[in-house]
Length: 175
Length: 71
Image (cartoon, rainbow over the protein chains, first blue to last red):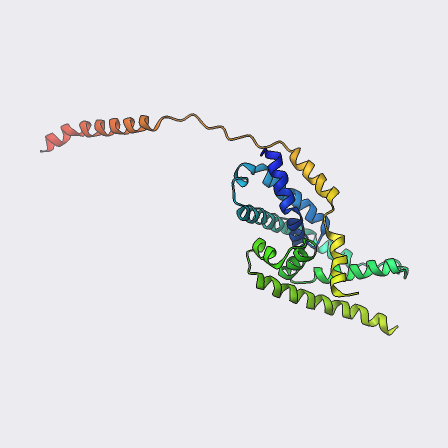
């Protein structure tokens, strides 16, 4: 198999899971996409060594790179955190119109915000399960933790999300 | 709407679509692959064995007159 074909196989095998992992780490879709490119650029540059590895080692190698790059990116973004937090506190200039589509989008935003507030391990696990459509066993293998730990983290995350949505729903029902 | 539906709706907004994934793939494979490391010219190991043996022999023979004088 030539270099590009082998890289394509690796990319297709891992891109969804790695992107979901990076969304969990960064809590941002676009940052995750940028990091995904960086991760697989490393894979491309190290194809000679990566292609000779067994599948589980390849996955571990890719996720180690993803973790390291997300840590680097997090350090770089710390300098901007104050500005971003200040912008997030800015009130919306106009109240959104109450159409069904906007309400649905608002509900997704509430879920997204609740997921962003989860502890990182729970956020990463939930994102890999939801956006990556991975099983507990697959997530456990990628993160190096038992599947039972993954299920526990998922349970905690779902509990926190349910609470967040309850506080969102109840004021609306009282109106 | 169930919690699963809520999570699925959110997941759909953050998932990388196939077009973006293909764009990233094309960008990466357009990057030149790193050149294979060029092996530097090196001496045969037997040359070093001969060199070391010769050097040791010279050291021993050079100190022999001193040892004989001291005896």
